[in-house]
Image (cartoon, rainbow, N blue to C red; front, side, top):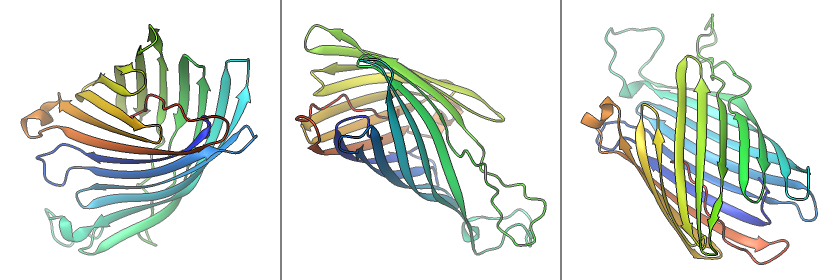
Length: 270
C-alpha cells in the first residue's frame, strides 16, 4: 500500500469453475494510497468468498512503511489486520447420517481476528515480495462446548517476483512468478509473462501447476481508469466438468500527490 504516488480503488470479481454447482465466487474491493510527504501508506479491503454452503467475509486495514535502501531501491514493510467471519449454512448440506451433532440445519458462524505481514522489495525494473496471510492461525470455535478445537485458519506462505524488460520506447515484457504453500497441500507455482504497449494495452499468460493455464487482457482507458480480464483454462481433472474461470478487474486512480498520474501496467492475479 502507498508505493505509488496516487490513490487507487480496485474491484475484483472472480467466478471460478464455471459449470460446477456451488463453485467459488470471490468479490474484493480495495483502496490504498500514500501519506503526503511521508514514507508510509494506508489502505483497506473488504471481500466476500462464497463456496457452496460456506462463506468467508472480511474487512481489513493495511499499513506500510517504505524504507529507501539506495537511490533506486526501496523496501516496503506492511501489516494488515481485521476481522473475518466464517459461516456455514446447514440448510444447503445433505448429511449422510441425520442428527450429526457437529452440524445443524441452521446457519452457524464465527467471527475471529486475522492479520497478514508482508515485505516488498522494489526497483524501477524489478520487484520481490514475501507474505504470510492468516498469520494468527486463529481457532474457529462454532460451539461453546467444542473441545478439542479442530477448525483453524491455516497460515499461508507466499513469495513472488518479476522483472520488467523494456523493448524500445513503446513495448515491455514482464516475466513473473508466484509460489504458494500451506500445509499439508503441495507447493503451487505460477509462472507467467505480461506484454505491454506504452502501459496502455497489456496481455499475458501464466501456468499454475496442477491447476490451470491463464490468459490476461487489459486496457488503460485514461490516466484514471483501467480494466482487466482473465480466463483460466482448467488443466486438472475438473476440466471434464468446468468451463474455466473468469475474473474481471476495474481500477480507478485519483489525485496524484507529486506529479501527474502515469498509468502503470496493472497487476492482476491470474
